[in-house]
Length: 256
Image (tube, rainbow, N blue to C red):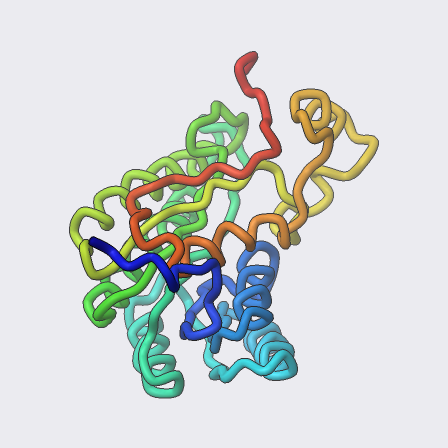
């Protein structure tokens, strides 16, 4: 019988790496982990953003490391794993939140744009899961997917395909890495992030359509996605793996 007496929703004793952790949802998750007492490395390709986020994490009491990472380069992820493991004394949690969105109809999308989105959003997750999964004795991997994985989104063929692939990869990785490492995905709906730009700005036709189809009548803020990551990283989720958790405010896409 499993002892559940200490399985609280807390990451206070965890060490975490958040790839894509310097903006948007990834940054919100990194800061939520630090606020709850975890040590956190938040990384991306951008040196200034990595340094600024590291300082913010330290100000919240987290031990961290300042290192960039490009998920399209295997050697970059390997350096990240080695540095974070050394500086934090091991890794309990990996969050894959790096992303890119190419916008073009399938008939007009440049091959370079397609390959960039697939490489960043899907192959990068594979590389990170493989490299970290080989080194983690136990813990949790959390992949940031998207509601677009199951939607027919115009001018997003690569993004939709990649995020659908992330869901499948999550389930397959859970089977391969269990029972020691749990692997789950969070599937956000519409969230105001730098990657989204002004697409969800109040007063636009798209925003009006989203609000009309969403019981909560708004889009989400990044902080509202972070709570699910804290749960999945915590011991409270000890029997949760291979799951795709959707956080979309109840959005109804039945008419799409």
